[in-house]
Image (cartoon, rainbow, N blue to C red; front, side):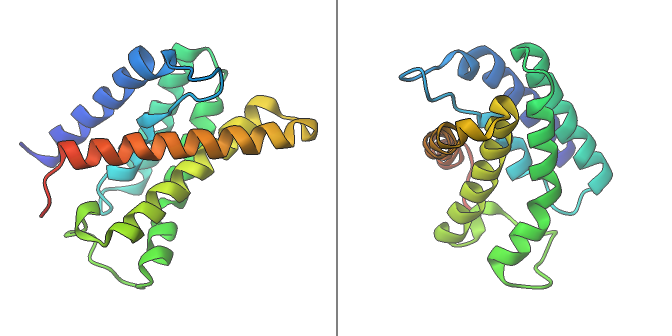
Length: 167
């Protein structure tokens, strides 16, 4: 199967899982995992950046449409798509890593965990900051961000381990 077809399938599977299953999970009325960001984590690095940013925005906007959340998912998703490559360069500490051969499962676990957690935490922090939009809710924003990020990262790691093969 070509990489383009795999990316299209990942886009729609992540979107459908989010809007059908994970948007309906509210553990302790506090935790709502946002696993659709797996598309941004797994999208190939060497593809055209403009297309990637557009697809990320479209994914976030689609989640917003089904969640009736007014664009906050689109903003958070677009932001993490924009910072993904500089973040990965910083974590791997290489100025020129091999874009074509890069696979998330081929780097050390701690570095991939750091990459996934930082993207997830940034997404959730921006998402909840835009949702509450008040300094009075700062503690709530940080608490929800941290707890939801941990749960989302756990689900993403579980999905990566179960549905990808190590190369």
